[in-house]
Image (cartoon, rainbow, N blue to C red; front, side, top):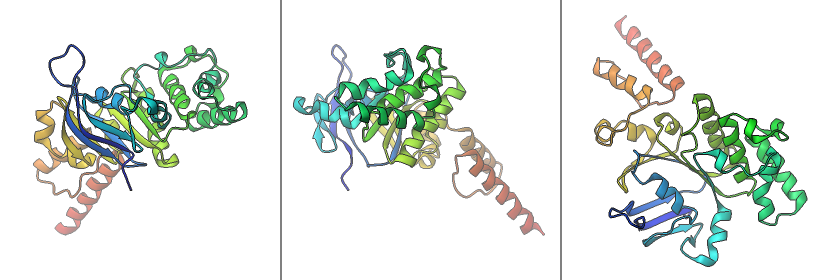
Length: 284
């Protein structure tokens, strides 16, 4: 199966900058996968995201979305129908005074029939858990609820891919969790391809794949367990690891023989408990 997004030797420099923001990036994203992109400020994460729906186009190299070259000006609308973007600040994406009107805004602009718009709006709001708030004023919602409305507005366009560019950066822990859970539901329950740009380590734990960007280069690409297990890499990039990875590392240093790299809290606790039980049996 061909990748749904493909970067081929992509270079990009912002006008007026001396240094490249993307330095020959080669990357493919499989259809239906959940990919997290991690990196410090200035690493190129948002620049990468904006290349995925032709907000930016490469200086050299090319980006293909479902086989469409994003630099083809005649196909930009086709690219953006396939790739929905969600940004940091939900207030910048909310354009109406009622939640359901806001979610309907994009499909209306695409010329979708009114009955189909109604179906899409209701389905999108149910999917993000905001259907009961459909007649509310968006400005009265919490940050996490606003971001879920913004995501619903993208879903109503029925894209094949959703790219979330640090969508939790302005949210409290509860709002962050609401948005991350929604992103995973889109991928796991609906089969949507999801790319999550983040600087929060714990948001990457359930991803199929974790990419670390560093100064416009891909510094690491693997499963979250593989990437977080590389202590030298994480230290070099100035990145932390999830608390579960810290705990496993400390326990191994103390002499506990732990097999595997579970990152979810429940899985980590189960591994430790099973290891302790096995050690207790072996001493009898």
